[in-house]
Length: 78
Image (cartoon, rainbow, N blue to C red):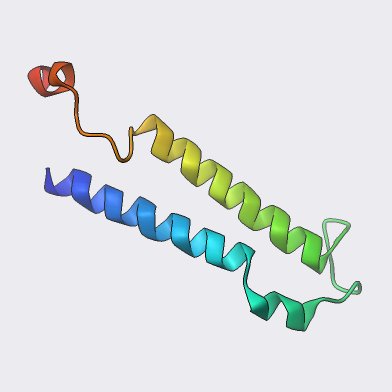
């Protein structure tokens, strides 16, 4: 039970962090065309990286049934 709570806390914190980084106002300080990352301007690469991070994180959370209590069948199997 404690391990499941730790996982929930980690997933929640990581999702909040990812969303904050995607919308970070610090990004506006580096809003230039010049530093290219994989052929994209820095701003576009930054948004794509954090979008991919959040997408993968939410997929993992979905597969782990994050936010839902264990069903009776899962409890009996354990």
